[in-house]
Length: 259
Image: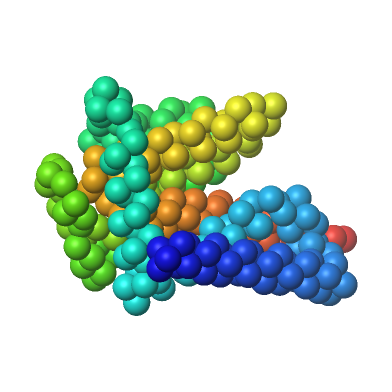
């Protein structure tokens, strides 16, 4: 009964945090609408991104807290054993290929090519967003793995990987890359936004599941990693847009002051 109880507690905590985030969002909206109309317009136009950022961030914080307090063990082991017992052996090759798409050997060269193409096409905002998201994602993975030091699962024989089990580097990097890519596609081809979101979500999900199927991460490793990667790229995107908006507002103020 301990594992189901822990699962229920985790879900209850996440729902509670999500409700708090929603409340804070509406309070912030009301404040900005009254005091800062220009910023309220930005918030309204980016409400989905802001809400997703807040939910991802608080979820990552909650899961990370449980990992550091070693409260997620029973749920982690139960989920991992269930996946190992129910995924057909014939699919292992597919999940190995999926994992490869989240490796630095694939993501960094791919990101480099796309960034060069974006710069060449004069989409500088998009190029900077993708570059910073991937590089900062790699830095976050290295720092967290170095300082957390969580032991990887040893429930069955698996391939050796460097570093701590927490977080899943493959999942975090793919989430950061995919989230930034969705923002890029939305800005350049708005009509393809839904398709981009679906592809990104499936990619992150498959890579995250592949790490569990291969037995090299705990479920909370990949859940936290996906939330951290997504929130990282969304934070960078919002920060870059706020910087652009601030420059635009200052430019308009200067123009109004000119005779």
